[in-house]
Image (tube, rainbow, N blue to C red; front, top):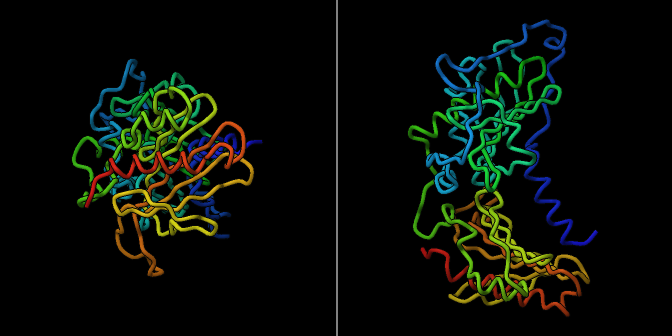
Length: 337
């Protein structure tokens, strides 16, 4: 399997399933107890998991990609969201758009909650039969796990994805109720990420690059840019592909085997060929230092451009030269502190 195929498969697989932690087992005493299965219906008068699903395009500004990029996901996993479901522990953030929380119900059963805002939807949206606060709602149950998705965009297909792992309870009932409250919160006054000068948290990755530069790198007129989550973008021309991604991380841009490159404007990046003898190169750089993590490493907003060619070798395809040219065009367009 080529590097290009593996790269795209990894993106699809990561978007298809949110597994931010394995389900915690109940204690021995609880396992022998026969607690009543908990079913939490949507709030009276609400529209959580009720039908029919709305048809047509989704024009709700509160759940547009522009609005969702700024939403703080952990703030949505609040005690109010889980009223009648259980008591949540301190939520755990993962990047700008993911968060997880452990919830304990009245019978001391554990519920694992994983939330992704702007998650990619795999499968037909036409499967949505019900609505949540005016949005189509998808629901998929697999044993003690239920994934509830509020569709926020039909093209590209994306939404608010809530995975509930609930042994001995009703994961879909809990998911529907929590989702209704999440979406209601988004329509009121949701907490947002800070927007200090120069941050890329609200930047549309698909609008951050010069299309002419990408077309030259891809060797032909590219397809329309395709968002990958809220902070990434994929641009293709037949097989060659360019991926752009922004994320907060303490991982250094200078990986082992990477070569320093000048990206202009005083920005130094690092270029690295990912797989020997395959035409793929990734350029990574720190856009803005945010602070320090728990290990006293720089926590930064990191940008990445990955060029994945169709055939040849990194040398014959000049993969890193192309990745650097695209990265320079991104650096020139990003906000400055």
